[in-house]
Length: 299
Image (cartoon, rainbow, N blue to C red; front, side, top):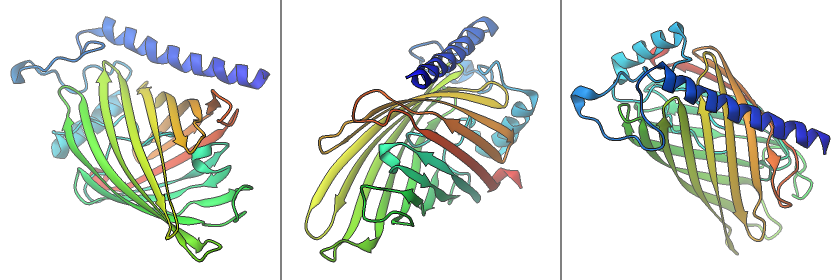
């Protein structure tokens, strides 16, 4: 109980950091207003980096480099989120590698070591491959090993840096590596949508995902929604997420305060502590994630 109180206090602290960033942006000068951002005439459109008061000179240099080749894209704050899917696609020719450790979350089994690569075909279209290692799944037949592989595509079809709004669609397919007792193989089809909007220096990333699992014998339908709010403070990105899932009769709800650190342009390190808000969700979890990027505009 004491630990959960400390984690709840951490969530409040991160929320306060995000609100302080909003207040600082309002004092620093004009920028998009909260909660609505009006469409601006082309001659009145602000510079796309003006409303991030905590960005460093190094961040501005990175953004200027991006503008040379991606002037029609929103500058990236952080590449990944923990509970949903990030709006930002990989750049053309850019390869991203993700790994870490997740424990205590229903969406990710009891413990999992993710291994995922993403590659940008264009600046808006990417492909991905995931091969997670399940290290503890007491309710499943397999205790350890790679129980499934996943392949996916994602397309960021709308990305407007002037009103800081973007939308994307994706599709993942997961294939079990083993057959069940009846000799059937499980396939999970997962279409999803992602929406993104910046309110001053604070970004809101929303993911809605449908999961349809089927074998030769039966079909099961599940889904989840994740809300991720984050803001840039130099090389640090505080994040607060809310996730809701439904699968059969279980509907876990999780609040996840987290933090990303960007020691260099091609590396991001993050940690999050999800807190279960109802009986269907684990009380406490641990997320750790390392993101490495190669190629693209870094070359």
